[in-house]
Length: 205
Image (cartoon, rainbow, N blue to C red; front, top):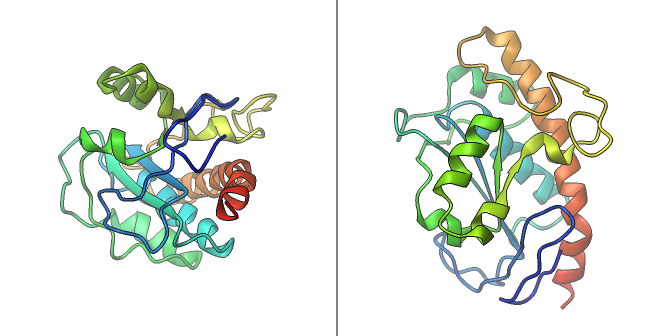
């Protein structure tokens, strides 16, 4: 994975990373090293969980000002709404604050504004790849569990589910939100560990 310039090369994980000086989120004291958006269906359950958990991992490692983390939905049904109450509760029970989240829909500008577009199931993967305006943008779309070797990544053993999809808990009870958050925490940590070496290298350039 390459950081620090506008010209990128496809890395072993199948996505590109670039460094820009500004983005849709405004100016940064230093340009962001990495920009990631998590995309589920309505942006009220899975993707807010991942956004908040991944942002916590980034902050714990000292990169809060250098990594842009956001989330969105493929649909517009919940735009402007809070995260599902069960999402907020599950996050709160583990020390995360999901109360400030507001749902939004994935937009065309998100392709240029992000280096990685992380989805939760194969249906979303198909939708986002169909929407991608270029082949470069298609390579940005990755399944969250593809980064987790124990769940669905290379040599994975299928720790939960079918090893590919994070299930949508919306039509289930609160216990499923806990299961999904388990998967999101584990995979988000695995994803951060994969990009952390490049972040540390880029921060010294």
